[in-house]
Length: 314
Ligand code: 13P
Ligand code: SF4
Image (tube, rainbow, N blue to C red; front, side):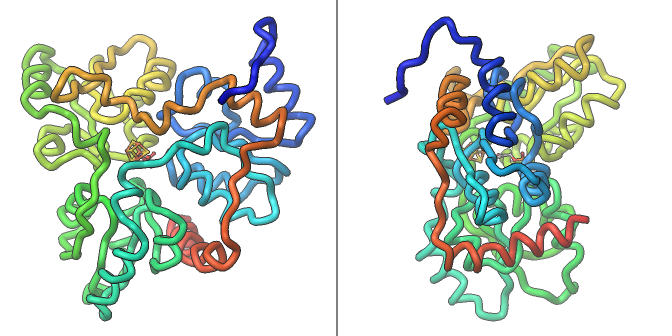
């Protein structure tokens, strides 16, 4: 239950004051509510957030995102206090890959290395050789010897996209993100026809049927950068709707249409990302909890493939 907050408090000012008092940094993902995006010291995609976490000199990291992201920040910073406004922020994709099943899958492919998408638990990271994100997966696979056999987990859509981009064969874990799987190909095609000249841009976690209509495919940061420099005036955006806040800020004269889900619900908002609120962020900084904790043995093992990713992304 959320503790009571004086309704007269200016939460933006209070968060700013507490941040300085605690020597804290606020890291946030683009899928957060606009209020949270607006208090972030750094707003970015999964790779950018890991790089910021690896380089920060702050004593406290307030991570506004989902659990695997904050856990990665803690693995990179075992001696720092890593807070998350609400610890109950999971990820359907990470949940689709339990560590014991992943270990059994690896054991069946002893001559393969395992590349795991950062959207997985610390336990799965600890069993992996290299971590990747949507912004560096193609480049990481391209850096490996051509005859290297590869297991790729847990997102099968990103895995398929990487296979198409690199021409490599990989064995894919059958996982998927519930938000990116919900977009309707039919409605996207109808929207494209209704908005002549509009570009469709998509995150590689989307299904192949959606990706094949995309004018540009990229991580959240890459999608944002694309809309900033591209000449079109309208974009159909197939990823979590939170990113539209930054797209509109970067290009206020352009129109951004969230790609429609296939059932008329608000499923293009990630229910896990959206449990974080400004009130909970304030309380976390005020009370220095809830705190992310990790098993040190797991963390030491998981650090190696994360560090390998950072080294291969310079
Ligand atoms: P990126 O921000 O790395 O593109 O990832 C998107 C995502 O689904 C995070 O959970
Ligand atoms: Fe996980 Fe999908 Fe939410 Fe990203 S958008 S945190 S992959 S459920």
